[in-house]
Structures are given as structure tokens and as C-alpha cells.
Image (cartoon, rainbow, N blue to C red; front, side, top):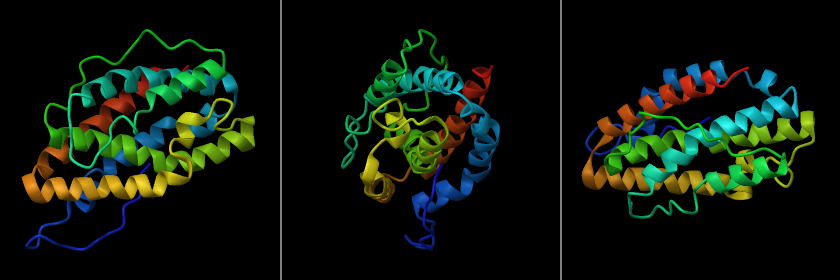
Length: 200
């Protein structure tokens, strides 16, 4: 789900925020990848559609929480995934689910919001591989049900780098790395459980 280049140490020997996020969430990241069982999910359009509905049930309330914040250099509207999920569900003839994740609020502060976004934005990197698998296995592209995984298209790399720059700028100005890491770990874990509950 995520790829971050090691950048060494900075700021008086402290790890850069993005490197620390990568290091300190690696186990949580690996657990969710193992739990997803994507080969099984991509066996049919039906199972893929159920996964999209589960993603919607997570993203809809979480993006509403994130919208409370204004973080310098970060256009949260341009990074919203709910419109893409709505488009995909419509293309597949599916309804947006009425069941959403509850009890999740890891975005009380800008630092915690950035930790949550580290998980969501990092998933766009892995989405490139999943997009290829969707096309190969199910004939699904960004135009007929795969917009969520295609996300920013050719701009995935630049969008990820810009996000990293925002994280580093925020950390330099305000600190908050501990909160970022804690929120990212919690987001990974809640997402793992939420997606697992949707398996059938």
C-alpha cells in the first residue's frame, strides 16, 4: 500500500516524519495486506463489488471527518475518494451501502488527520497494481468500475510526493510525529477489521 524512500536523518538526528511513519507502521501495514486476500476478492465482479461497498462504508465517514481540517499545502477535496467509489458502484449497478464504520475518530487534530491520510494516500500506490489485476482478471478499467483503484491516474506519484512534503513541513513547524504514527497504526487496524467483517 505504501512506498516511501528512505531519506536518512534530519532535524538534529530525528527521523523525517515520513520515514518514521513507514518504519513504525510497517507491521500494521503488512497485517492488512495479508488479511485482504486480494486474489480471492478479484475472482469475480460480485466479490469485487462487495469490496467497493466496504471501502465506501469506511471512506464516507472518514472523509467527512477529514473535511474539518485545513492543512497548508493539502487540497483535501482533490484527494476525496468517495466520488470515485460512487462512480464505480454505479458502473457496476450497485447501491452505496447504508452501513458505515462507527466509533472511528482518529482525526481530532491536524497531526492525527495526517496520520490517517498516510494510510489512505499510501493505498493509492498499491492501487496501481490492483488496477492492472482488475483489467487482466475482470476487464475492469477506470472507465467501467475501477476509478477508485486508479485514483489519480498518471499523477499518483506526484500526489504522493506532495503529500510527503506536506507531512514534513507540518512536522518541522508543529511536531506531532507521535500522533501521526498512533493515528496511522489505529487506522490500519480499524480498516483491517472493517474489511475483514465484510468478507463473504
